[in-house]
Length: 161
Image 1 (cartoon, one colour):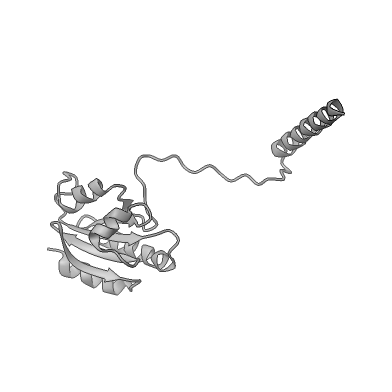
Image 2 (tube, rainbow, N blue to C red; image 1 turned 180 degrees about the horizontal axis):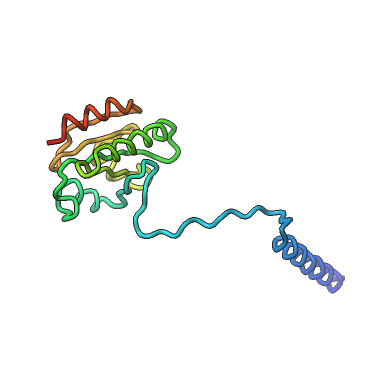
């Protein structure tokens, strides 16, 4: 009896594998294949198009002005957001337009609150989206919630030297 059961199981397994191989390799695939994601070049970009801050140390290098690449730009706008947050999705394109409008005069970065909860606690982020503008390591403006582009442009223009 056990030999028959083993034979039956091996028969079913081999035919199942042959069936799947045939259908996966044909154009009539029963499973839709998703394209592979683009390879990462080491820099993560957020929904706003801004470079993601991936560690607390990166945050302090940027905001405190210790990063040689950003030392010339002393004003930094950071969007604190999460991928699942609806209002964050509304704010991201606005931040992208701000980034393009003030290119060369303003550092723009994004923090995923899910990835850096310790940083969010340190910076007092209780709701998202939150946009904070830092100047020479200090908070100069803070906006909580989704706001219009005009409001953010006004805040940035008031803080830029």
